[in-house]
Length: 380
Ligand SMILES: Cc1ncc(COP(=O)(O)O)c(C=O)c1O
Image (tube, rainbow, N blue to C red; front, top):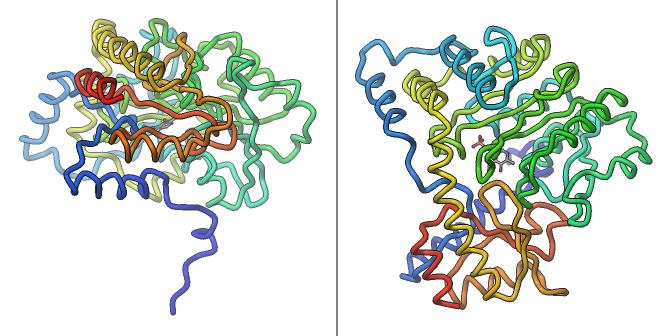
């Protein structure tokens, strides 16, 4: 028998990959499932984005391999977007690397910097991919817990009590998924100072900066941040392009060059039509985000109602496309999710998926039509 690599035993199948089989079985049985589990935008991209893809796809010369670092016009569009919305300067030739979604960037960054036995600081609760990638590479995840009473921000005093000598990367993500904690420049400043003091890369994962946030932020707004920070960004949520798979990584030239060396051995540049579509999306004005947030804001009000009807509570001054709701004391998030699924046919995500500190919470996605949220309220 051919055995699997030891690496495979380090990770479990992604929660959604397993649970959605169960949800899909219920749908196949004719159950009227309302899926509030996943943050996959249900709204379409702007028409100009689709037109750019269509126009490019219809040209005979669009179908060859593309540059490993994306076409120059795309890198320029990312740089202009960063300057326009975050007032942050990036050099398009050397400091930007387009990606097939930011998720793959987590792997490329980790492969570039981590050796077996190195340690990685990971937020708990947080995006599960930081952990699985560290484990796949034989590095050790070291969790730093985020608490509601500390605005879901890292507790630097606690962090500094630990032996940080083996830590190479600290993953951070604000607006934070799943709690919705907002980005804050003062927090970014502290993170940069922490990274410099202990020589730890501050890898900021920033896919939600525009969602339910009027003043989007980037870690590169902090002076001197490029010396120690990297930032991932994505068009998945802000431009409704999750299935297109397009995002980017930014950082100092030396690091981007090393990460490109890894990435160029794993994939090739994405389809030209997707890159042209992304350029159109990046050129959109603030009105696009305002329009998007009008919809998310209406949905969020309805989800707040639903949360209240279900006897839970949630914070309201949040950003991002989720509502993070606290269960009554002592209730398990798995039990709650299953009872909601099997009694009312509403699917939400149990908090433990995001780490130990997520137990006792559930996550509602706002990527669901208002009518469906209203229907969920009516069912309860
Ligand atoms: C915190 C966080 N980072 C990264 C990603 C991946 O996004 P992308 O579609 O750009 O790969 C997600 C997607 O859900 C996310 O929630």
